Image (cartoon, rainbow, N blue to C red; front, side, top):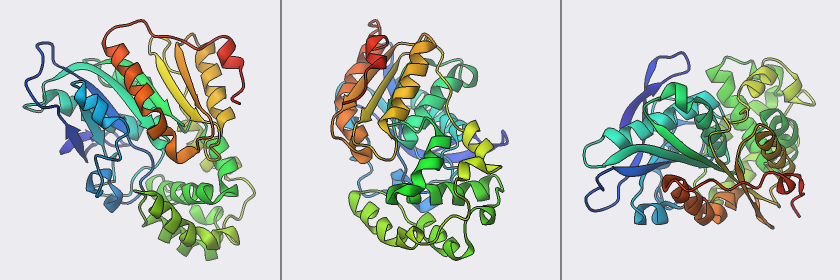
Length: 336
């Protein structure tokens, strides 16, 4: 599908994506809708998940959702599948595209979508899911958001930008963020990246991530950055990067919106303690949070390995069951 959403300046933009509809006639009250917010696939138009070879296999939990009568709306986000560059890790941009994909799933002939929806995302998509929870009521008052589910979400961009250039995967994400924000916001990349590293950053920006093989290929592309990359010790202390990172760090959700969080204990990209800190903030704000720790699981598999639990949790929210909470002692417990 190609649908209308809202750009960073409030302008109408085209966004692409996929709607997956269960077979058979919809129930009288309409089908529930789950918005799938995808993890990082790239920052240029040809990296859209809807263009991927294994588009359906990339949607964690898709099969059980469709089998239970759920319409799944999977946005590509702006600038992926449509004119770029993609505003990478820009929360409001992602969330508007997510919510507008739900509007399509509700209104498109033959989908039978109702007004209730949940949002479910991994990594970048976890950030998108949280921002969806923050703006849903004001952006789409006609929709009823029953819950937010996020696996290894990017909850502190300042921490990510401080930590992430230490690992290969982190350098990849940092390079994509700098490339995207320099184009989307006009932030001066030459103030933080050494001139000899710019060609590698450009090369990484043009590569997509669909499978583990792509990640391995990107590690080869990224190798020069291990010798020469940044001209500053910490991007998160340099303006305008610091302000942009702060602006795109999700705050706590309104307490009325239940939250499901999943986190791998072996994740060296979104570290367990960062997700635990967000859990504790949400609990302190009065929210109900279900926390699923995934022992020994790294960043790439947090969505896949938590999908069954996330789907069961979302189906309970659609059924109107009271949301459970692991706030209290569980919030203080460390992930072992």
